Image (cartoon, rainbow, N blue to C red):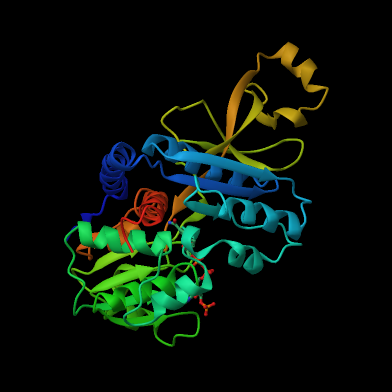
Length: 359
Ligand code: NDP
């Protein structure tokens, strides 16, 4: 069997179209523009990139977007005061505090300061509490779990009455996704690091959600034939490329991959280097010893791009599992694009609620 691929990118694009249409109507009929504020504290490059991408998406959706940035040494009081100011700002319908916060801060206390009506991440204890209780509706559902459910529904996967197994019980993925599946009348099994027979438990699943953070842990023989498998994991692994040649920097003994620049390749951390063909030696650019200059003069050397190659993989061994599963999400391009789409969806809901259009 070859699994049907669940294309998160395409489904997210559908959701953006729906959001854009609703935003146009909100603006025209009610004069409301949904607004999202991001709060970034410090200079973590990954967090900066996430925030930039959220702001870009806001603009695409026609939202009002505010990016607040405080220095890494900001105090807890300063961050909470900023959150309070955004709570009181009527043009803002969602506040996203980018995690992790610097170590000296009490993250939970900052998240609690976000007003319930603007908790578009869905992590406020009251929202999580409502999610856990039968018959109560949270104002916002956490974005990644909501994205998993949306992928299943929009791919036509039946949830009601199915056996769903969730690998992982974290507050941000495993636990809330389990609650969402339960609300949709699946029978759920939540597994974790103390589960005795993990492959056996997973093999019972009609729907398997993998959120463990262990590269390619779920193998083909863990999966029931025809099951729908949602791979939440994002793991960075070092990978050799067969077309590349591995080099050790002659000066530092650091190993890297040297090849000529290939635009089709993604996911490499680029470093400039120098390769001397005659000496068959490569150097990271900053590590080229002075005397190589002489060698350069004697032998034509070439500047090459040096990559330390890595690949992003999920918690599921995609190549193996695609032969057994009925549905499967790829990594990247599966759950990842849905997380931001659901954040935008939540912000839109916040704006509609503020306008009294929904409860
Ligand atoms: P956590 O580390 O918070 O939780 C991992 C869970 O997996 C825990 O419940 C842990 O069990 C369980 N676990 C870990 N190792 C094993 C093991 N060997 N066997 C069985 N269970 C195990 O991770 P997150 O939930 O935050 O994230 C999970 C993955 O999802 C990560 O790869 C993360 O990068 C990715 N992610 C992707 C997002 C997206 O947008 N696509 C968003 C958020 C996360 P225990 O509780 O017993 O310790």
